[in-house]
Length: 112
Image 1: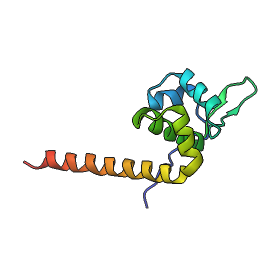
Image 2: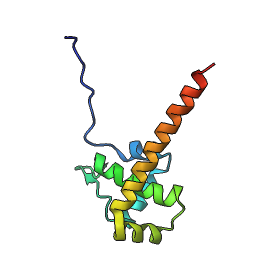
Image 3: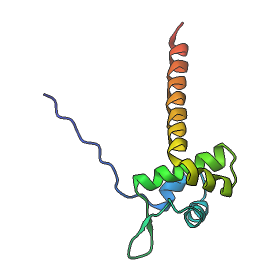
């Protein structure tokens, strides 16, 4: 049986890495942290924020509502307060459909 190298996943991400994932400024991530209760990164002794996967998923959710769907901050807060599970499910469905679409487009280009 061949040796499989394990992929190393980070436990914590710096605010710069999180901002780069969404192509936004770090100040926007800090602002969202103050506005939304669901973003709660840990802070080390120096005061640097350490984001977990869960924090990044919550940032992704807020990014989807505010930047992609065009909600105001208050509207996004209301959506998350009323039915955050439905919003997460819809976002997951959109991500899945986007991946399927990209796959089908790649297949179309491979056909002569």
